[in-house]
Length: 342
Image 1 (cartoon, rainbow, N blue to C red):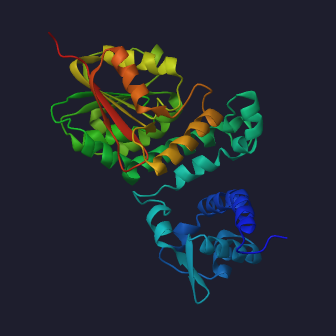
Image 2 (cartoon, rainbow, N blue to C red; image 1 turned 180 degrees about the horizontal axis):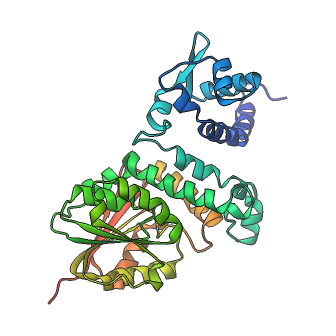
């Protein structure tokens, strides 16, 4: 029998702890769905009061809240539970920093990951709603609003700070999803107008966000696919965010050529995505896991690309002066220019 403190015990406990990790995401998911963090934001409560508020078993609620506390999601004092700083900062709905929908999106892929051995063996993608764990509408809604969480919690600010668009007038946002980044760029650049193209489901979500923004009159939503919709030309900036990661190489190359043709001479293309742009151990860990994630739940041709690879595709499409811009957030940038007119 292995003894605590021995190398054998440490190794075995490492395996046991890794096996238990899904408990933690399950507790986080449940707390979000039960809206516990909004309940406790300004009003510490006992487990009995929480149970009454959410219509749950007091015994189960006590054990659940204790687990939230030991995981650092809640704090407990004199028998009353309240939000931890992290929960207050990022898990209370209505705050710009809220990322709860993004967390739900990741846990919606639970059943797909649970069949990872099958997925690896067969080399296939298993979309979450194909497992029966969530229905398609819930999956896509959580996905798009989760991406909006990512934008409002910091990514959009990084994008705005990294781009000088003061001389740009017309933006095309290819695969703009919830229109989060077009909204941010238009609000930071009052001369800018944007056209956001995507499928019906993302644009349903985008419509509400655009209508709430200060730039609603400068943002047009265009339903359709990249390759089957006429969105015109004459743009001087093109944003491609969150598309390269989940698309096969052939589609990425076609998309870059489409962007090139849509831009005026001297126009700017901006690729924002998970990409391997720097040699950092923490980034390497995230990029490695993200690479498998998109294979499992998006597309067999997807992948977390090397920055040099994406740059080469842009250059093959005709772009010049590529620049990589690592960011302190999860997504990085690559920019390039269409050559000016002779």
